Structure formats: structure tokens, C-alpha cells
Image (cartoon, rainbow, N blue to C red; front, side, top):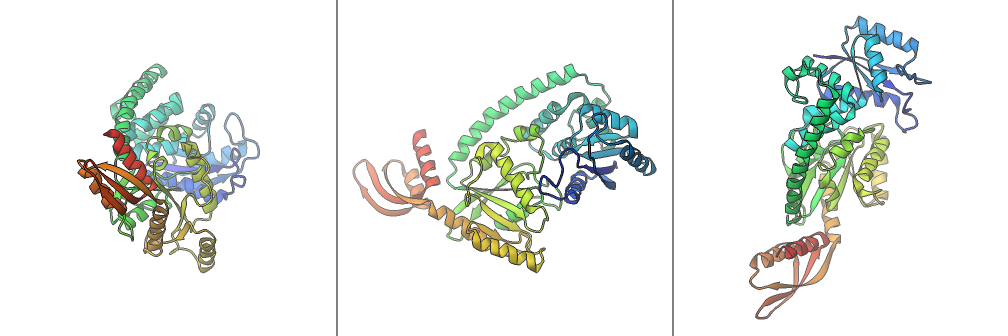
Length: 424
């Protein structure tokens, strides 16, 4: 087991400016470390007035932390901030311990958790692009300590000194592989457009309870846990709404503040379910002290994905974990729900409020329904059956060639029908 000492370096990105407490940021860093089963020996906050180019930290802080590291036999230090390669190397020499920063830790988690072939390719490409010489040292160190997860091969490869030229060749090879995966994904995307049901995507800050809510709503058993990034690969299940209408619910990777830009780009494809969803449900941790800053972080990532800044009421907002809040917080959340018709307070654990969420999703889909006139060849029985299943037939007149229908359909179903007819 690797022993970890964590500190929150507030000099580069002050927590007060970001609207979140330094203590909450430190707790999040501890959660990130525990997400890959690192044992947290000590957690310290280092307040920095002027970041030092060589080591980030001042001399006194360096010495104090060095004593803690030596006394506790710590061999891995995680700095919750951004370290330059020079700063990382100098800290390692000063403390005689491995040092990684926040970006390195998040990449490590993603590398350990990605399950699909494409996900592992994306993580490896993001990691290699992050910092070549620094990355090799960080990953091989952790692999020797914990047995490895295939990031740069097996234990044998972790003993090799891989130079920049070899890593560059590997990056080029990964990009070629991903190009092939992208072509396959394009076919899958075409197939998704033919799915005869609207898609509802769950998004939110990591550990907000998305997967627990997903399981509650769909009666599934997707892996959950009180840890950051419990879900990395997207999962989709059938969702039956109160009206009897069927939708597809998608559980996605959790977002986090200061998400490495390499991962935003690498997982753009993983999050395409969000960009193509008919309804996006933003799940928030109503019991977290930094719930509002987390909300801003999620909206920022959505904007990075090309969704733009969501307009008021465009997202359905879920305040989760109300079973944990005190009476005053519960009253405040309920007042917020009264002011915002697109918000629901619930508990994914107890089920309280989940029926209200399903009803809201149902009404949103219903509000998008409008009457249309359709001319369907009588020989196309499959399409006619589909229309009868998903629409409300207002009238029908047949001639020798076609059925002329007046029907109420949702905008999403109209788009699917048009796409299906183009294929024919």
C-alpha cells in the first residue's frame, strides 16, 4: 500500500476565489486519493503567499513537510495543485519521495477505472500527452507499488527507461487506433439516432449520487460507492415513466473542478450521450457545503463540451441526499424548488422525491409533443406500428398507396421518424 501525504496548495488557485472552502478542497483531494485505495497518512493545508518557481512552497513549509514525510515513512506525496516538471523533480529530491499533482492523481484514477477499450485508449493518450518525462516516472513508480493497471504495459515494461521518442511513437499509434474507434463510434451514434425512445442523461459532480439515482429509477445494479469517480464508462437502461412512456436513461462520468484539459478532450466522445440527450438531468449533492461551486464546475464542463451555457430551466436540477440534510437546509431546498419548476429535491437512497422527478421528466417530454401530418406507405407496416406505439392518432385516411395520418408526436420522435425515413 502506498502511503500518501496530501496538502492543498492554495497559492496558485485560491479556494476563496473559486467560491469553495480550502477545507472542502482538501477533503476532496483526500477522496481522490482514497478512490484508488491510497492510505492517507497525513493531510495538510499549506498556505502560500508567493509560489516559488523552483519548489512552489517556501523554505519553512518545505522543511516542516519534509519532517512529517520522514517521520511517517511516507513514499508518495500528492499536491492538490498544478506542479511544473521542475517543481515536481525538486520536491522529489528534497523529500526523497514520489510526488504527483492533482492532474496526475486524476489521470491515475481514470487509468485504474476505465473499462472499455476506447476508454483505456483515451486515458493513455491523455496521460502520455500530459507530461512525457514526468509521466513515465509517476506511472512506473505507482505500478511497482500497487501492481499496475496496464497503463504503460506490465511490470516488465515499468522497469524500462522509455525515452521521448518511444513515447511519441506510442502517442501516434494511439491516435491511429482512436481514429478507427471513432469510425465505429460514428456507426453507433447512427444506431442511437434510430432508437425509438427519448434519451435522458444524468450529469453532475463526482460522488453526487448519479449512479445510485440511476439504479433507483431503472431498478438496475450499476456499481456505486461513496467515492469519487465510481462511474467512468457510460451506462444506458430503459426507464418507464408514469404515463407509460418509455425513455432511455444514461449514467455518465462525474465532473470535477480543475478537470485536466487532456481529459476533457479525451472523454468528449464518452460524454456524447449528454450532447445528444433529449433531456439533461443535473444531479447535485444537496448536503455538500460546496454544492453551488460544484454546480458552476459542471456547467463549465458542459460549456466545454459544446452545449453552451444552459439557459434557466433548460436542465432539470436534482438536489440529492436530502435524507442527510438538517431541517433548516431542507426548508431552504424546498423553497428553491418552489421558485424553480424544473428542480426536484430527493433522496436516491430512500426514494423520497423520485416519483416527482419521473413526473417532471414525463411532463417535459409531453410539453414537446405537437400535431403533425404524415404520409406513410401502406407497405411500411413497421413504421406505421411505430407511430401507433409512440404517438396519439388524431385521424387517419387511407388510399391505394399510403396512410395519411394526423398524429401527436414529441419533437424527439419527429426527428427520429424523419431520420428513419431518410434511410429509406
